[in-house]
Image (cartoon, rainbow, N blue to C red; front, side, top):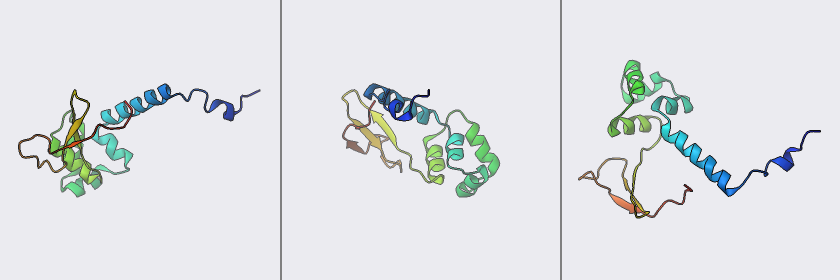
Amino acid sequence: MATPWKSLKHKDDTPERRARVSQRVEDALLEMDVRAMRELLGKTQQEVAELLEKTQGQISTTERRGDHLVSTLRRYVEALGGELEIVRTSGTGGFAWIDRSGASGDGGPVGQREPSTVPK
């Protein structure tokens, strides 16, 4: 006889397992390329091209690159309705951020925030 779902659904639900799953999700999101972001949001290259005032071919070329300038990523993410945030962590447990407009003058952080509460 099959085991009822009720008895299985919490069987492996431990804090350690949840932390491992959260880390895998975070890693997958960090590895997501710009094409995958666009597809996840249901946008075509042509739609993104129109938003960025580029050609579809230019968007295709951008998506095939292995490395991007921060300004390129910022424009692309904003065209998809998002906001790019760059975080620098430090050995002290806190972190600083560079604002999305890139207006930090000397290239350094423009503010400080308390350490994240997101599990590692």
